[in-house]
Image 1 (tube, one colour):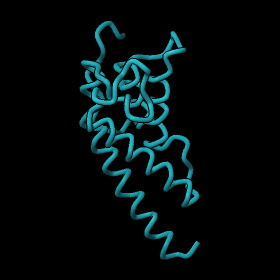
Image 2 (cartoon, one colour):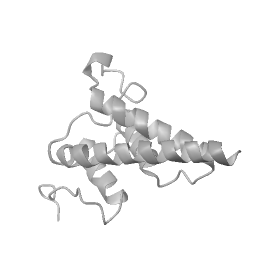
Image 3 (cartoon, helix red, strand yellow):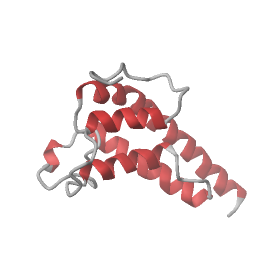
Image 4 (cartoon, one colour):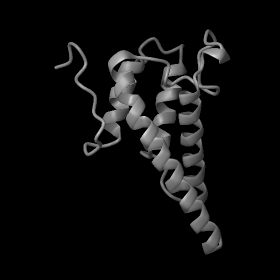
Length: 131
């Protein structure tokens, strides 16, 4: 791959991941506290969720996560552990209705906050009953 093309892809990746992290920093604490349908989108949702029930924020997060994973693959950067891959993993788990032991939105949001690293500045307050 030409250096100029790789530089353009790297710039797009930086922009997508920055926006993804900014949106997650605003959304995850609320979801960890109150629960919502953050992890449902047009690609990951149970059959009982209708398209009009999926909000724009969830779609934007999905789009940015998918774009960042795709760009990482094109550039040759690791995907495992990236913000995009972790968010898509949470979406996959949330929409898997055949798994009776799947985590709900509060626990998925708390998990994602933890996975994004100890130095993030958007930790939620502890869940009720959590030690």
